[in-house]
Length: 116
Image 1 (cartoon, helix red, strand yellow):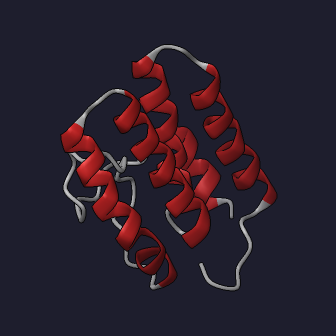
Image 2 (tube, helix red, strand yellow):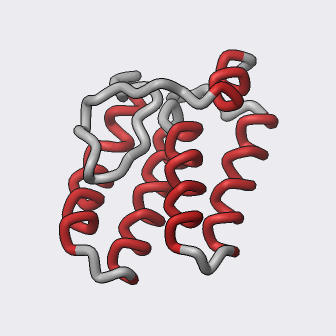
Image 3 (tube, helix red, strand yellow):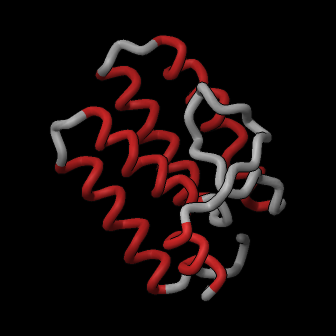
């Protein structure tokens, strides 16, 4: 959200998920952490874009062309979508999920985001 800072609790959880994604060597766990960070970051342009950059880097490291291409598209639309409040709530940010497909929020993240 433009002009509205990320609340401290949301920021701490976002950073924890991004850090956990970097720290694990398990690819599936890395994706799970990045997906959770994506859900958290959607309302804020820079964290949302930063998350897609991390997803792109992981897709490249895994030589997943489909995911990498999907992340390029998402990198382009992440900041404008967040700034305009036009993002599909709960969407995990992966290329296998439609750009505009809303998804259920995990209960812990729903609680965190409604407290903001």
